[in-house]
Length: 306
Image (tube, rainbow, N blue to C red; front, side, top):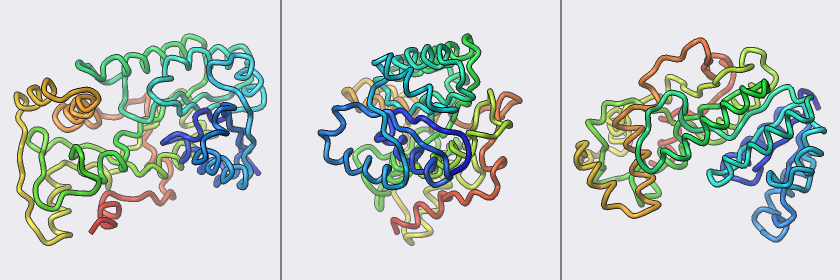
């Protein structure tokens, strides 16, 4: 086993499981903070057993139990939080524990979406994004070494159905396109997000930086994505383009939590929040840093659905 000792919080979650598998695959001594109550969930028990069979160590506690946090943080060099939206604010507790223990070499807060410092967001997603900004500023104020992972769009959420609400596979007849379809967005397979995150753990080039997952092969406009899909299935889709006015009406007419997805789609496909800025000196791009990582391209991903 080589590399830093890693503590993962949220290991059984959507992204946490991929980060955990990557940590174990890359040979890091890996510790998972899990709630006692997790042992009553059969699916999570099965997942935890798969992790322990690969060498993970389970530590019982939670992000809202300060004493257990401190004990867990003392055992590691790097802390990675993959908690869900409801627990973003609870990371203040974790920041305090990392500061009090004083030996952590790197903290990865729960990010994995868009760069919250680069957006001027309104609407239903605003409060969660503001919380992530608050967490970043708290980390920096305490002088904790960090890496922020900006993974953009999870392929399982956005590419598996081309961002069509209610679909579980790419459309074969008709597609609703937000805006004019020319704005580029970035799609990443969840396993690859885990791999790139763990690659960055001991890399001095990612220290106090934003790690952007923005590989050229996965940065594509909706129009180009649809054209690629049409070529694969040998069929032309009916295209419905939504104007800004229609999207605003859709936002008003869609009840919670569906309106959250509409707002996110508007941010990505109309405003271009993932690609309307160049990566500056405070950031690095993952596929350029780690050219040997074989990630799944957009074309490879959608080919599985043909």
